[in-house]
Length: 551
Image (cartoon, rainbow, N blue to C red):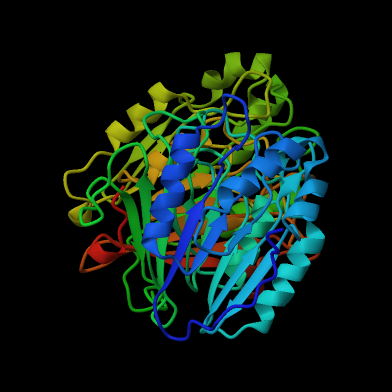
């Protein structure tokens, strides 16, 4: 039995190396590639890692034969290893075999300035995952107990963010939004996931710090994706400086460990989120984002009137963006009401459809009320492309390959550092997990969209849909989700709200963004300063070579 509890010798102040393998899918059937697993084990043994961790789907079917075979193979590692269950390990009552043959379904490693927490995200006989309220509560408590200078790692099987080249975005963690909120609130430094059989690296930031999200590919499953074959992951951590270097090492070719040009890699420095002060900067552009008005039976007029009065009182508003679900049911009278009410806003407007606007009738008459389903706007400060992500009578959305590539082409710049315009893509469906919501009914191709927009020249993505305000930065793209401004279906304790997105241009290149949620009081006649709260201040930079992924 590979007991998950283990006495360790404190590493102290030296560099720490993590060896990660995932999704081995060990079985006697054709899903398993023995040659690749042995190559992965030899690679990790050669790297001399401090901690060896398997990020789930150790077995393919969760059967007793699979577990016994897996333990035989894993005994070839030179190290004590840790394992968390994946969805395949929990099949066929395999979670009980995991407990009997391996140990607890979670683990904790505390070693000097390093904390590693392994969590079980599996649900028996389901491909989707969930951490759950109980485990999240324990996670918060544990993270509260550790000092700020501790390097914090959290590992679970299911992906936190949508992953490229994985088709329809399903089988993620239902509570990914709540997980993300905890990780950002407690300044976790590194998250490691598996599950999707393709490797990926994202740097995610809120106003206070950065989180590196690493997805491991499969070490030995024959189900691979696109051109990526089997691999293992090597992560080097300096707990003192919190600098992290990730190498994703392919196993399908002979490796030269002196040459990393064939490796997928990324670096992150966690001391690179200084407080952003915008008081002394001149406002470059201002965007107002409203969403989910739900004109019709779900529409509440009072918050809409308060919101529009406040918007009209603001200076230097370049554009008001409505990110969809303009109507409740796509009826003609609802569109008529929408046009009349939106006339109250004095500024230029850009409106994209949501699924409520895309029932059979709404899809036909949308262009009679608004200038196209994929509207654009450009002035001397900003360039905005609105994108229709709606499918007929479906709450789930999709952008599609052709529309994605067209958007990327429109935002192509030779030199983003010296770009004179701030670029924005806006559509209805949420792109990333949102706290306090179940991570479903988003975009079928969210993985490909997120990957492309964060590696192109799109500075911000604005979405709606979930009636919750949230903002973070993925790579150098700020992503915001806006609450409903006037629907009776309120998901937030703050009530209805909208977002003010202020943009500042930095002298050395890049941008600073100050994003505020403006809550709309239901018991008073005006919006006051106490109704305005920060969603985050973000710096978009292009000049830190050591802080970029090389993927």
